[in-house]
Length: 139
View 1 (cartoon, helix red, strand yellow):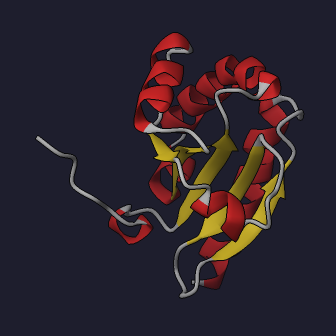
View 2 (tube, one colour):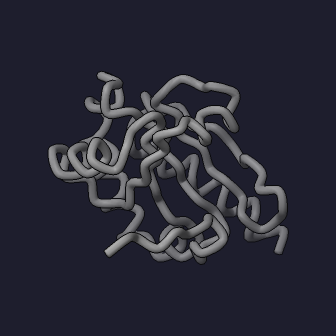
C-alpha cells in the first residue's frame, strides 16, 4: 500500500519548525538527541504546541534512509524524504542542518526566521516563543 501524498497546507498549525537534514551530515546526527529533547519541551508547552508543528526534511535522502535515521536516532517528530533535493533547491542550497520557522498563513509561505541549531535548547525555545508571539499579536 502506497503512502498518500500531502502538502504543507495539510498541517494545521500556523508555523512549521523545519529541520533540513541529511543522514550523512555528522552535525545532523549529533543534533538528533537535542532536537528530540526540544520536541518534548514543545509538546509540554500549550502555547508553542498549539501554534507550531515540528518536522524534518531529509534532503537528498530517500524514504529508506529517512526511516533508518528516524529509527537509529529515535526521532519523535515526523521526517520526510526529499530524494530529489527539491527543498534543498528551494532554500538556495543551504547547508545542513538548517532550522527554519515557516509561516504558513500566507501564500507563498514565508520564512519567519532561521534558527541557529548550535544554540542551547532553552534559548531555542525562547526564540520560538518570541517568533510565535509576534505572529499571534498580529492576528
